[in-house]
Image 1 (tube, helix red, strand yellow):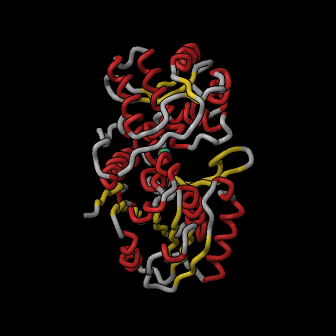
Image 2 (cartoon, rainbow, N blue to C red):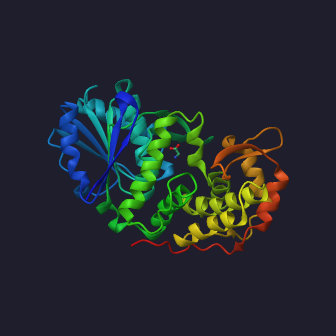
Length: 350
Ligand code: GLY
């Protein structure tokens, strides 16, 4: 059985469909748009691209942060133009989160915006990147500095795509699923994969519907990300995003406990949930707390008031963005974190 979740945004509402074989619904979705042509940008083998039922240009792409460039967006748009893609036609992305980001931005800019449908092929892209309309590319000066909010017309999360997912990619996705436990998705641990994806997407859909442009509630999606991002940077991205978010989630629990926002049992729950997904819980040995704090200070999203840092933290009333976390508390919570020589943990997936 497939799962269908609506991202409610008025006349820009769309469905995220999850399940085995759902990519084959692409032709139906395209028929509904009235498009005459379609450009599919795919970072996956040709046979992963389903039938479109329309004249189709298939362009190859490659996942990876280094390919998220304005030059790549420009090149895609040039290829769309040569193909004769019009303003009422459709762009389709097929790949991981970096492909969704780049192709989504190309769709947002081409003809000042053409419809885009995402076929996310990684767990991370299915539970997070493909849903919610954030698109962006990187500059030498920083990640995601050029982007747009551009909601897709549909997202088809085909779980068959996950069958060949490398081990580290599972961890990458499960880090985002684990943090959902603390932002209102409920306990997803014992559910089937399809329901874990659906549970994470449903929570994200609610949040995006209430705050499309990151003015408030959408900050909750950054649970575990403040320290997580610092760990990624400090290890030269040796620790992958989802792994870093997992460690950041354990830390967020400890920091909230230290600040008296949650009790010891809830702090322990952070550790237990992350562990249950087989994700890392310890800070990699050899990275100093000072270095992590320095990186967080330079992270715009982590800048709090004055000397303070900002974190999304749990409380007995639920999670919230807290902008006035004293650096001293961060230092203490970091010192209390378990430490281990870095080695990717084995995630749990059925
Ligand atoms: N990945 C966080 C967001 O979509 O807001």
